Every structure is written in structure tokens, then in C-alpha cells.
Length: 120
Image (tube, rainbow, N blue to C red; front, side, top):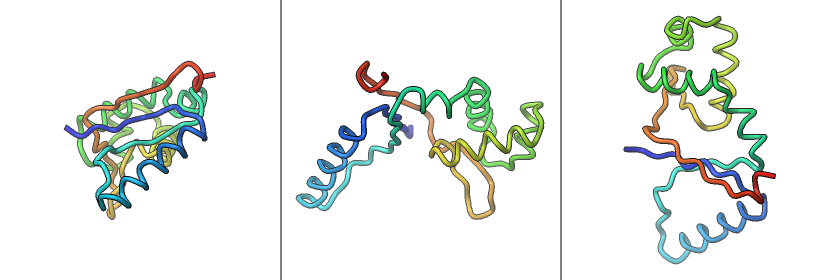
């Protein structure tokens, strides 16, 4: 199982965590295998993760590596709308694109972490 940790955290907390990881790497030469992305606010995360995009991720995960056209057909949605959603999810790090421009969801589980201070 491959997890993707989605964190909603302040810039200060993000940079503190990155500095800690850099010190760990300097000491051990090894970084943890924790895959993650960060959003600075809950609003920013929710702007990226709409209900349609959530359904898109689920469908793409079940289909495996495919084209945007095939995904739009499977979702029974307009190609242009699916393309826009895919680009947003690729840019956010939630969808991978290979050298043939095929897209996939390499994660089996998304773990979202936030606290009330960061969510404000």
C-alpha cells in the first residue's frame, strides 16, 4: 500500500518539518519514505479537492494508467472539464503523469492531516 500524506499546515510549520527532515538526512543519509504534499489552508485544499475531482481520483485509481480521453468517457463527463480537473490534480501532486502522458493515481490511500489553527 502506498500512502500519500496531505497536510494542511502553516508555512512556518512546513519549513520546520522540512528543516527537521534535512537534519535527519544530514545525520543518516536517509530520508523517510513518507510521500506527502502540503496546503497552507483548508480553503486551498478544498479548492483543489472538489467532489467531482474526488470521484475522478477514485475512477482513475480503479482504471489504472490511462488517457484523459478514456477517463472522461468512463466518467461520462465532458473532455474539457475532465482535462481541467486532471491538470489541477497533477499540479497538486495527486495524479502522476508518465512519459507517454498517461495519467494514474499511484496512491492507494490518502491521509489528510490538519489542525484547527491551520484550517483557519
